[in-house]
Image (cartoon, rainbow, N blue to C red; front, side, top):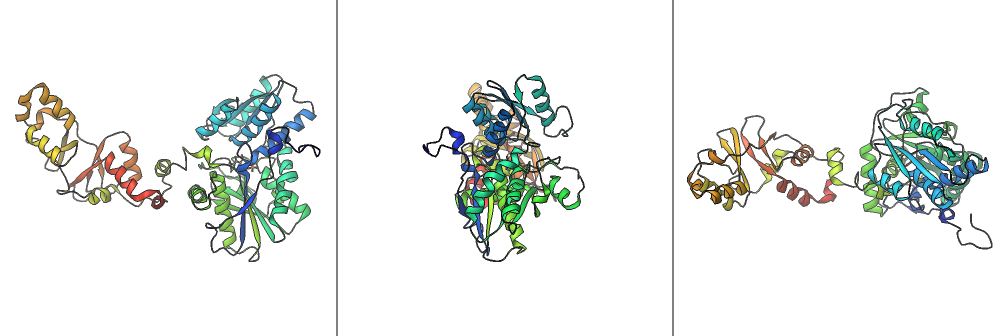
Length: 467
Ligand SMILES: Cc1ncc(COP(=O)(O)O)c(C=O)c1O
């Protein structure tokens, strides 16, 4: 905290916290509650985890575990790394962060921008494997002299930071009608710290954790049994172990949210509320609305939902329509057949047979303003011709014009069945220039789909309809 006499912050660390809340308007339309979003992405490092960086390092310094010039080592999904990197920058420490390869490239670049060393480990390794990200961080802390491993999964200062700052802020901002606080859960620091604050100061307020489907935390809360973790894509929340920092006594309910809902909701928050947030914010809001749909608190009450981080670290992920399609998170009902049938062409399939003269093939290419054609012998896909190849052959030897295309045949276009979903067509068209679409029922060739066709289709649909 800055000095009372001089309110100017001493460094960026004094600017952490005191984040605003704004009411959700459109995504919570018709919901008989006031839903306030707490914008943790407005912290200087872009996430709620800025709050725990200084808290954990202050404790390590006070206990003499970290000396000047020392190194901070942490296993992080990225955001805690940024929170610690701010402290390292301001106080002159080195920083080494271990991330799993599931995390976005933006997060890795961000940490490197702060001067940190980043080590990437395979996401699928179990926590006790020597190569897991927890184990690698632990080993580095043993090997590197004058280093400290704050270990957000076990460090009591993690929930404590939220008990001291996030909880009281929400208490003030929520007002008298505050009846519930919702936060997505990773290490559990946020929800456990806020939970403890309210249990002690305002026990009527319900505390809700939002967990991704596949995490073991929600099932553990319900059954006290350790389930088998199943991979999911949302970053920063859910666990494959039970962190010591989760205090289940402070949590009243768990809501499970799937990747698709999280990402689609995060995208809506950006488009409909102007809140450019990460996937776990989408989870938190989707989980809040799901929980409220069961009418657990009186109508007209206020609910605060914590939005943990900023969207800029996910631009290459769920903010990319392409990534969303590849992962089948956009509702893509259309198939290759729909697209080829929707092509406004007469005749619908432009093709030549192997006996067509090169001269006639070139005329056909020009007439239809296309650059390539399939060569078909009845229903058989025997090859292809491309304008560029034909012209090159003719320029080399003009008599080629009078030969059949059989003499200059390129490889046949790969085929897809008419029922092929567009997401798969998109994937295939990254590797090949065009695909031949065949009717699965009668074996007839329906048409050719090019990269250009797909692009035209996607831009016609617009991104709004894609969601
Ligand atoms: C993006 C994101 N959301 C939510 C969380 C969960 O916060 P906590 O670890 O306090 O449970 C994290 C934690 O790293 C995070 O990175």
